[in-house]
Length: 91
Image 1 (spheres, rainbow, N blue to C red):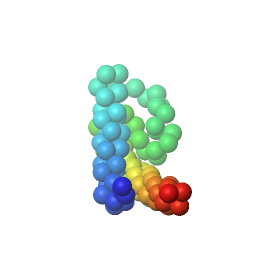
Image 2: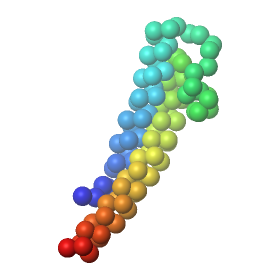
Image 3: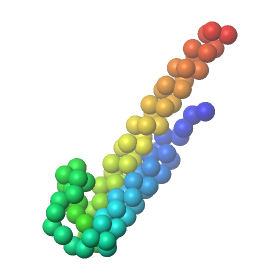
Image 4: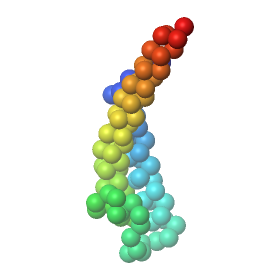
């Protein structure tokens, strides 16, 4: 079974974008607005807890998730085709 790279990348980008946005709002609602940096703010430039930070997290997540999803789907297709060729040769 092959994965379609573009739809998989888009779906994973949307998933990761909304996940980062949700994490930002979750921390902001539970802990309040504190100025302590979180780990994700060192990975994603401009990302902070709060409503505006959740929008920045959404944008970064869409970009990062799309690239990561495309790489994952491409690598999966590459490795699954190589294993299928190996099985056909052995039979």
